[in-house]
Image (cartoon, rainbow, N blue to C red; front, side):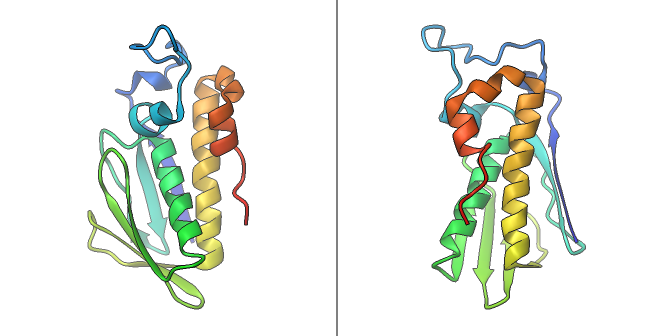
Length: 160
């Protein structure tokens, strides 16, 4: 069983529905961009337990979109490669994946544990991460459903 969730960081004011979802330093172009979502706003802790192996991560700076897209990139690369190491953009936590015929091995640079999951489980985890990020952001700020980048990049299921 895989247990996964994002836990929004209380100190990230962008989770508050009382804060306008606009870039505060760009009044001439206030709409949030892909870089804003991936690097600056909507930060959370990661709860991830893969078949009893805890790979959770508590950090003050992991944007949910960054993790979701990093996971999607790793999954796509594993379709044609047997190994890949990917890094979160802001916190520089490394997730290493090794694909075998039926299983994927996952390790990180912050936990000594080794997790194994199936290829379908990795695909499902990727979709859960994207859907979870999109749902959390658009629940806090329903108007962000109109953000084309967010909707098309994070809110749309991956091509299989």
